Every structure is written in structure tokens, then in C-alpha cells.
Amino acid sequence: MSHVKILISGLGYMLSRYGGWGLFTISYLDSSFLAFPIINDLLLINLASKHPHKAILYTLQCTLGSLLGALTLYYITRKGRNLLSPRTPQPEKTRVRHWIEHNDFVSLLVASLLPPPTPFKVFAIMSGAMQIRISRFIFALLIGRGIRFALEAWVGVFYGAAAQSYLRQNIVWLSLGMVVVTVVAVVAYRYAKRRLEAPEETPEAKE
Image 1 (cartoon, one colour):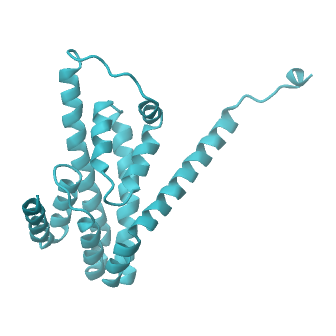
Image 2 (cartoon, one colour; image 1 turned 90 degrees about the vertical axis):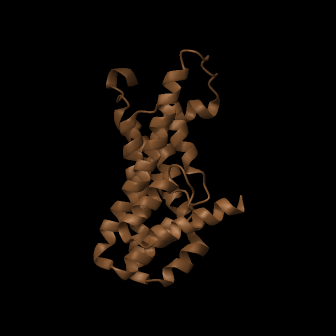
Image 3 (cartoon, helix red, strand yellow; image 1 turned 90 degrees about the horizontal axis):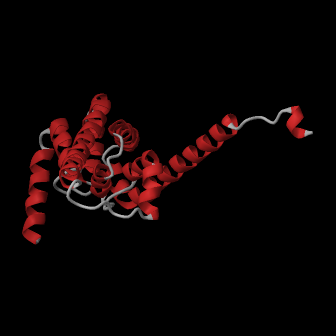
């Protein structure tokens, strides 16, 4: 197993030498077949600190790479589920599965903001297996990953290479903070939406 880690680490180092496209490739592989924990985050900060005028481009490359990697797992799982579903009985729905099906957008949005070593691939695989609507899957990941990588690029531009050590020490708290803000915003939005959609009592009903 140590040899695999060394190989992955070497591959990550090699790809990091190709700038934005290396960042794109690392993000794709990290969200699909391999694991580069925190490497793409640190590389994004490093590149943004060295080339501030390309920070937006690096953010887009990182976001799109991560999205395409997750979509790869999504389609593989969904295709496999479609091939196997006629032959295998449908599993009984658990409370967790029921909750995810009815809150798929929020679940994916929160998962895309969580820090490593959170197994983000699991959410992409579950989404494909549960056949979550592809438009909601893409939209949630674009928002979640876009916010996360945009903040990291911003940190790189304004705080330079010193931000890398700060991110290593505080990525968990920063990510959890983003998750809390996101969940609160979604809950507030749903509450306000329900209040607006609730039928108003008529004077006759009050009597």
C-alpha cells in the first residue's frame, strides 16, 4: 500500500508542474479514480499567489476538473445500476436514503464543501446509484466546489504562499464554517418559501 501512495504522490508532483492544466487533471483524478488529499487545494493557492491575474482561470479549471471527475463516477454507477436493476431486487429504503432522495441538492452541496479526507466519491457513487437528476447533481457541485475553490484562490491572491500552511492547519474549520453557513441559508430559504406559499386565512375562515 505504501508503494501506491508513493506512486500517487509522485504523479501529483509531476502534474503540479503543468500549472492550470495539471491542476485540472489532479482535480479530475481526485474526484474519480485516485485520491490526492488536499494537493489540489494547496496547488490552487500556490498558483493563485504566483499568478493573481489567473486566479479566476485556476478556480474554473479546478471546479470543472472536480465536476467531470464526479460525473465520471456518477455515469459509471448509473449505467451499472441500469444494467443490473432488472435482475436484482430493489433494496429497501432506509431513512438515510429517503432523506437524501428528498434533499439531494443540499446533500451534494454540503458534501462538495467538506474538507479532505471526506470521501466525496461516495456521494457521486450514491447519486448515480439513486439516479439523482443530473441537472441538480451538476448545479450543486458547481456551486459547492466553485465556492470552495474561489475562496482558496482568493486566500492565495491576498495572503500568498503563507496561506498554504494556514490552510493545512485550518481547512477543517474553514470548510465546516462554509457548511454551516450553507445549511443555515438553505433552511432559511425553505422556511421563507413555505411561509410565502402557505395559503392565507380568509376573513370567513377566521370566523
